[in-house]
Image 1 (cartoon, rainbow, N blue to C red):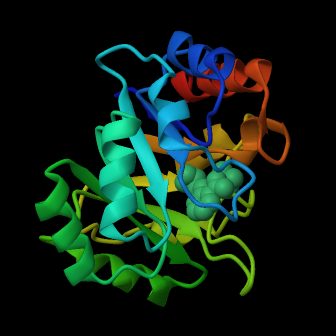
Image 2: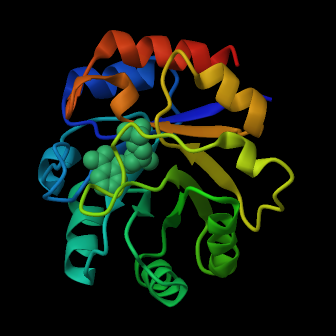
Length: 210
Ligand SMILES: O=C(O)c1ccccc1N[C@@H]1O[C@H](COP(=O)(O)O)[C@@H](O)[C@H]1O
């Protein structure tokens, strides 16, 4: 079974092209002003991708106006909710937008995984990410969690793995977790918010071989 990959936090034609040429199943655009990867929907809309590649918008506790603007402007096929959105809010977003909805679940301990179960029937996919320190970004920090926590967990929904992935650890992450979809941002950058085409290519190659 192949392992699919989402390359997140893209903002230029060169890096989007590196992702799609390298076989990414999804690209991600961040709509969160505090992030060094923040982009306006119209700029993301100009970034061309093949039909088969999912276009995922990353949001943190967005209101409906931002969601609707970004979905149209950036031609999103899905949204990733990376804040404190409740199951009810996630279900409402799904009903309103009618596209795929991923819910990020921050993980530090095994007990944190239980939050995923609350989103059954609300989200389409759970994205397990490392819990970040208070007062910092909720994602995109290059932090990983103990992947062994996922061993034996009964996943309530389709899922993906993120948090601190890079070319050096992707094989181990896939081996330990058995994930079929990985999501990376900092691990394919040369500085926060600055993607590196060679790192994107190397990450996708390593993922395909995992
Ligand atoms: O990338 C960001 O700036 C970001 C901001 C706010 C919420 C989520 C964000 N990114 C997501 O975080 C994970 C992990 O990123 P990393 O590989 O550890 O840097 C990933 O899903 C990004 O989509």
